[in-house]
Amino acid sequence: MVISEIKQLKNGRYGLFEAGRFVLSIDVDTYLESGICAGDELSDEQLEELTASAEKRKAADKALTLLTLRDHSGEELRRKLRRSVSDEAADSATEKMRDLGLIDDARFAQSLAEELYGRRYFGRRRVEYELSKRGVERGLAEETARSLDNDPEERAFKLITKKYPRGLATEADRRRAAALLERSGYGWEESRRALEQSENYDGTDEDAD
Image (cartoon, rainbow, N blue to C red; front, side, top):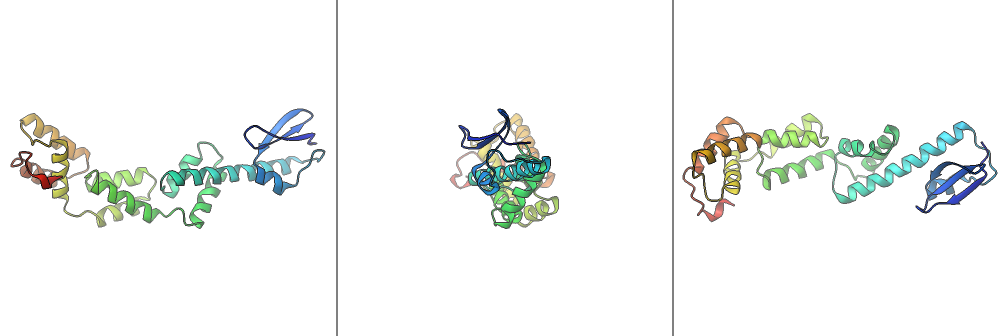
């Protein structure tokens, strides 16, 4: 394949053409590093290497953008990248972010678990589920959730008072509160104690959050 023309596209990338036919586009850095000029002949192997290099750089740029928005586990980042680039490019970008210290699954799990416990008042089982759903390895998810699971009965009570600030006035309220606790990952004993505590709550305790 002989590259007949190279021109900058509207999106800032460079397009490679063969006899007026578009072949592929590459980012500026890949273009400059390649040293390609119009009139150069590329083998299929060279073209594949160029495409792979451009895609890896695209994946790395996307990874940085995602990590700027919020922290990710390695597996979560990899899953998102695979939606728009090859598995190889996604894997390469993920490992690059890990090498740069921008991904740390233990740190991510700790931060997310603290938020789910402290702001959402979830129970341990729900926290483990949410961590696993975001790509945290199961063993790490269980260990992290267990280490931060302090005073679950009080946390369950806070969840009820957050949802029912005026207390559980009716039997229907109590059934709905029990279902809420189950969905939020609390066990039977934790739920029972929180519901018992809520029976004496009338919405006037300002410290219940």
